[in-house]
Length: 147
Length: 88
Image (cartoon, rainbow over all chains, first blue to last red; front, side, top):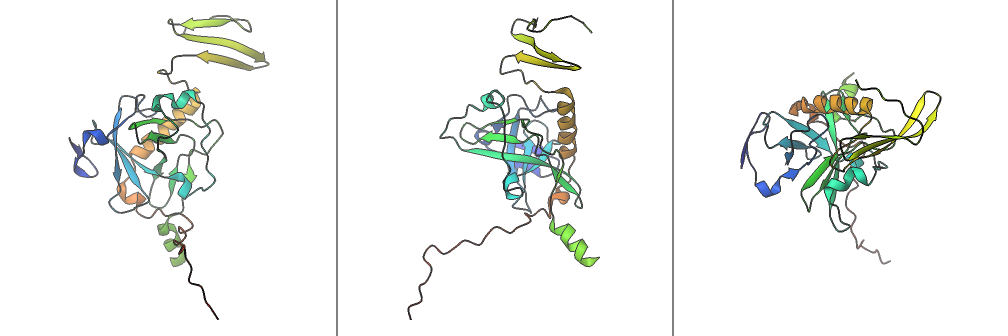
């Protein structure tokens, strides 16, 4: 299928590669099918692109690359929709928001994806993780050096 | 808004498959037990609204903004599994 996106132009995506989010994302409950698209410039970043709304895409990272001791504590109930089995591979991703100078990631509401079943859901962690965890960027480092 | 009075351990039913039980009452804090089908997500309202705001912020992020994100520590270079041994 072809998705006409706002950010990446026209994307050709195999429908079998799409992830089904039975509950959508929090606040975006009606958007249930998402593609995971690599960022064209930064290998640390990917985008969850809605299959039905070309103007809806969220940047995501693998939080453990930035917060090595990050653990997701959630109830079994909240991930039931993923149909996880012990031999399934999963991704834990968190959303990015902000500007080039101050970029934050939401550690409170990670997105968990079952790569084998192509299912996804956004969960709320049981512990009090920050919703705006500030990330280091090389841009910040460069402007600090210039100052 | 429908307002109902309940004692501890009493419940209300919403539809035929959601049960909300008053588990405990202490001062101004009430503990609720919620039984609902897995297809109905249950969230604390203020947390739900805050995450909704964060998701909205995330969906407005410009691709340019994510260009410089890097982990603070560079990933360790891969180690040679068979280091050369120096014999002397």
